[in-house]
Amino acid sequence: MHPRAAAGGSTYTKPPAYVARIVNPALIFAVERLGIAAGGVEILAVRGRTSGQIRKVPVNPLAYDGDWYLFSPRGESEWVRNLRAAGEGELARGGTIRRFRVAEELPDAAKPPVIRAYMQRWAKQVASIVGFDADASDAVLAEAAPKHPVFRIEMASPE
Image (cartoon, rainbow, N blue to C red):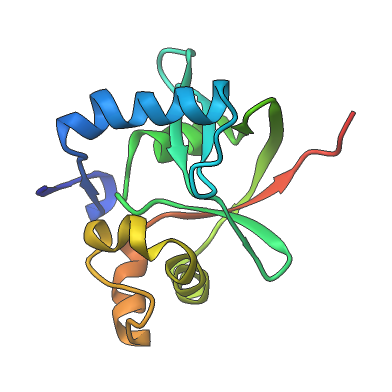
């Protein structure tokens, strides 16, 4: 896995082909269609910024300090770019769909406590991607912050 430069000097760690072509589609099917709780994974659905098509990807949403967050362990991924453009999306697990809007993309200085909480919950899934674990120092988290977009999201009220 080699990071590649993305817009703004950020990086994107491309997943291995087997993850993109086999693991993610299998997770999407299992979580979205079968309702299997795969360790808290949910399926993010967001409109593509150029195609207009709905794009889906497994994500690990985080409830932290009374709010919900989406963290991108791979950096400037396609879902990040699409979410910025769309400003809204859905999180699904089984038959439950939660619509949300992006409340804000956190500035780098505000990210470290959210990243630490995320790593405390999801380190087993993402530590090898991000290069640190939940015990990382404040300096490591501050250095990582510009490389990893974090969105605070607001769930829509049930209709």
